[in-house]
Image 1 (cartoon, rainbow, N blue to C red):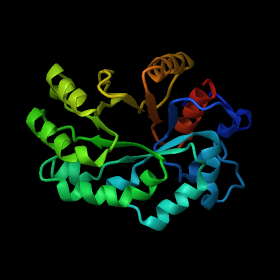
Image 2 (image 1 turned 120 degrees about the vertical axis):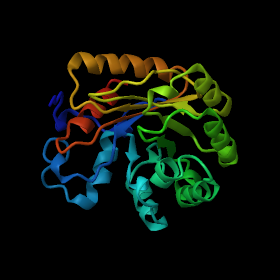
Image 3 (image 1 turned 60 degrees about the vertical axis):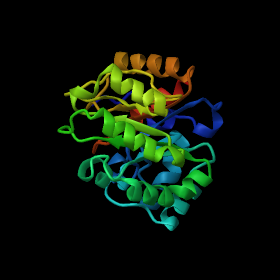
Length: 252
């Protein structure tokens, strides 16, 4: 594990100039992040309040399993500042069960559930992470994107089968204004190709060296000149993810 900064070396996000770059981790409700990221005495109900002083976005994986209630979203919005952005993982029913087919009802339900965040202008991206055994189907992807066009979702697709990485797929994404999510883990690294007016990154390695963080900073800085950037580090029991994210955000 690589810890590159101490919590007390961080300056609050709201004291920094606003950049078109939003960085965070995949979730925030982890007591095991004490005392490396959260102060030891911080109660769990205040985790998001504190998280939002150190990072300016979060990827909510909760929505992969179930949709949040309006009261839950109201609490999240109240706990974070006006510049904070929430990204959401698309429900597994859409990506893993229906596999992007016959999804109109599910997408409508997702948009209704997330409407409070959209109305507050606090939406990041909706991440559609496809299962590893889902092979390329260009027509299905294009049909799905056509069906969702009226909802004005900022959508990013994380493909986990190599057959998706082709110019034909990239052209469909460009035509529909959807992003190819650039993702990396200890086992996998996907292409970093701009297909939308925004970019989405998922950094999932178990640890990052100082040199690797420098490289990430360079990539995100370059992309932020082309549009908004959303980047998320992996959740682990150790607070490596949010510490790496905070270290990168501190540089902007």
